Length: 346
Image (cartoon, rainbow, N blue to C red; front, top):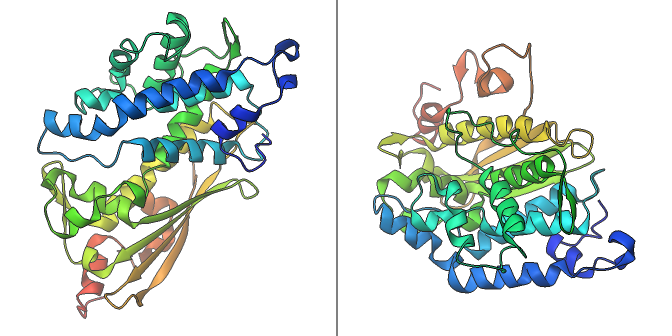
């Protein structure tokens, strides 16, 4: 899609009339901007607070306007220069779905993806021009996480491949897959509360989520290589401690591996609905480790997370990335803790 290096909302604002049915421009941007302004004024800034009031033992990463803008950027990156071409109406529906996908956290983290409709119903004619459009936006937004009643995570497949609305047709599965994977790629260092983390003032259940986000420095979609490129920068002091995670303690490196494997599964799942239009085949990972003087005290690691071996094998990050095993020793959290504390056994 030729976005001319613009974000999706910028592109929608300037989309020429020739891209609309019968060359008649419908100003979807104005309708989208009404929703964006309403949410930024009345909802987005209170989402993290609402979730924390519901469960004071958890402090979510940022879910406000900055996170929404990051998801829009990731979605734009996925579409930039890809074979996928969305209509202005599809871009409008996608942007609205991004805006509302996390607002359900206002009522608590549990099942938050199902609660966006509660906010939407309080914004009649703002989120969508009519009830059907609002319902469609809510349904697409809901697929970004959670489970079905039977416990399955396969929420996109229940959508229609193509459905007709008043202002045009949309490919609901495709839009949902873009939203879901863009959201997966949006958990970077702009979302962490590093001051509270370093001061050990965060709720213990949330520590590792902020540590992970703080260390994820950059996310790049490389269309030519069909890859997503992640760069982590991990301070030495993060290797010598464990972080709280929902009632347990974990090493940060192990959390990074777990999240990479989840990202790999999300990539496979989402790309199954955009095959031939958006093709991301692998995740390139770079991890550097630095000390208090900002020197790299451990050689950086570069590896790819991608399909490897027969598909029904029980895979994990170490199976897909054998370079993470040296002399039968896994480079996991304990391994790096020993390096960081200069233990001789490595």
